[in-house]
Image 1 (cartoon, rainbow, N blue to C red):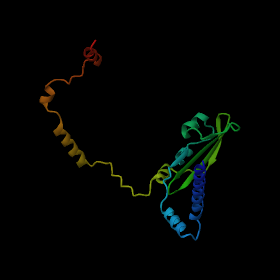
Image 2: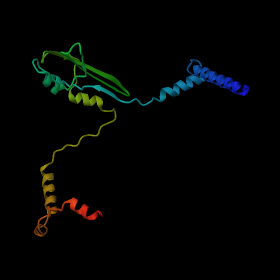
Image 3: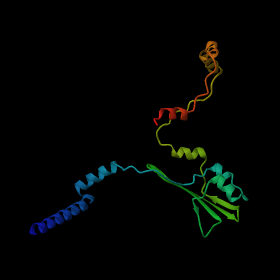
Length: 194
C-alpha cells in the first residue's frame, strides 16, 4: 500500500516538473527557447483551404436589374448564403476564402425585395471571372496555353493521314458489321446448373 502511494507521488512530481519545463521553453532570454522558436518559425503546419459562400462575379452582378423576381435572381446568383427570419425580403451573399500564404478574401452583396420583386441591390465591388480565377492560381509559373488553331497545311496533312487509314474496299465488301447479339439472360440461364 505504501509503495502505491509513493508511486503516485513520484508520478505527480514528474508531471509537475514537465509542466514547469514547458513554461520556460518560450521565455525570452532562454537559449533553448530561442532555438525552438526559430525552428518553429521555419516550419509551418499545413492549413486547409476554406471556401464559404457564393462566388459572385462582375458579370453576374451586371445582369441584376430592379423588378426581377426572386426566382430570376436565384437563377442568376444562386441561393443566398444568409436569409433572415426577421428580414425575409433581404438576401445576403457572402463569399470568403482562406488559403495558406494568401491574404483572406471576403466579399458581401445584399439584395432587398418588395414582395417577390427586386427593389435594391449593392455591396462590395466584385471581380471579373478572369480576375477571380487569377486569385486562385498558385504562385508557380503556368505553362503557356498552346494556340488551338490549325493552319491549312496542317489540315491537309491530317486529311491525307486519315485517307491512308480509311478502310479498304475489300474490308467494306466483307459484309456489314454484326449488331444483333443474343441477350445475356439466355446465355446465363443456360450456364447455371439447376
